[in-house]
Length: 220
Image (cartoon, rainbow, N blue to C red; front, side, top):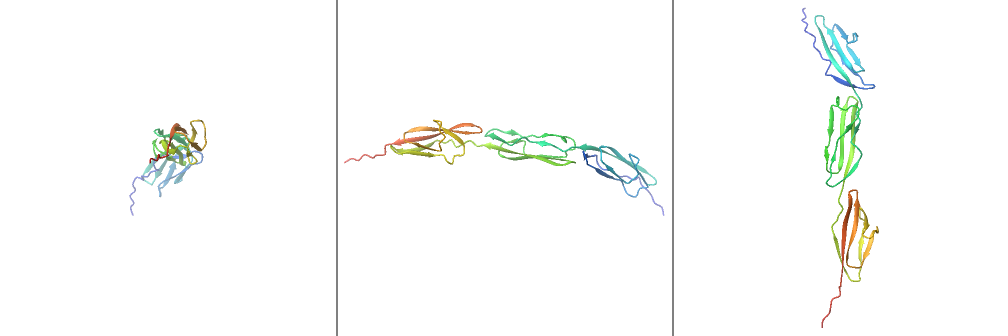
C-alpha cells in the first residue's frame, strides 16, 4: 500500500476581532496531522485566543509542513448617540448623523441609517455591529404644524352676540387684549385678532364679526 501525501493546505480564517474584556476565539487546525505547533510552541490541534495579536500554526503530515497566520484585533462596545428627541418647524430639516464612541471605524461591519436628512416627523435609528454585539440608538423627530390661520367671518344681527369658542383649540393663544379666555363674546362689528403660539413662533388668526341691521322695512 502506497500513500501519496500532498502539502497540507488549510486556513485559520480571515483576520478578525474579539471583544475587549472577555471575548475569545477558538482557532482550529486541520485534522489527522502528525504534529501541530502554534506560535507559543503549544502542540494541540486547537488554540483559544483571548488577547489581540498575531497567531500562527505550523502542521506536518509526515512529508510536508504548512503554516497559516491570522491577525486578531480588539473591539470595544459601540456607543451610538443620535442626540435628543427634537421638534422642528415646517421648512426646516435635520442632518442626522451619529457620534460614535469606542468601536467606531475598524471592525464595525454593519452600519445602517434610515435617513441622513430628516424632513418629516418620524422615528429614525442607527444600528452598528461588531464582535461585542449589536448596538443602536433611536431619535424621535417632530415637525410642528402651522396653525389654522384662515380668517373666520361671523355675521350677526345688531343687538345679537357672536360667540367664539376655543375650548378645543390645540395651540397656546391670547387675544388682542391679552385675554386667554376660551370663550369670547362680541356684539360690535370689528376684526378680533387671536395670537396663536407654538414652538416655531407667534401667528395671527383673525375673527371678523359683522353686525348688520336685520330689520326689514315694510312699505304700504
